[in-house]
Image (cartoon, rainbow, N blue to C red; front, side):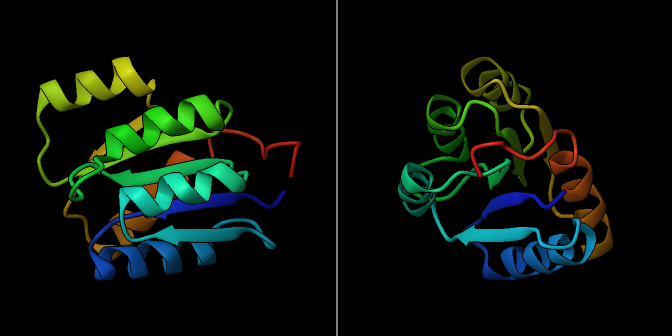
Length: 131
């Protein structure tokens, strides 16, 4: 079944690799949306149903954890995945407590590792019935 995934990262290269990897690996008909920052992601989540949100932690004014906290309230059935170059136990613990994240992984990853990690993370649930 096709999935709708939102990938949020302020690094255009990571975003491009992630989008391409997901497009190739997810079921046919899946849609990968992208946002370049937390503000854009929150705006998109207001009007768009998604099956998974994968976001970087550190992105300027709105952190990935804040995006996922918003996603938890607006899209509670979506899988919430956090990734970061700055893997700190306190960051991960706070994201697990505040946003109930499903997955966390450290960057940087090679493009093949990123693809595998993203697909594993978003494939953990069935698509939203709301479409």
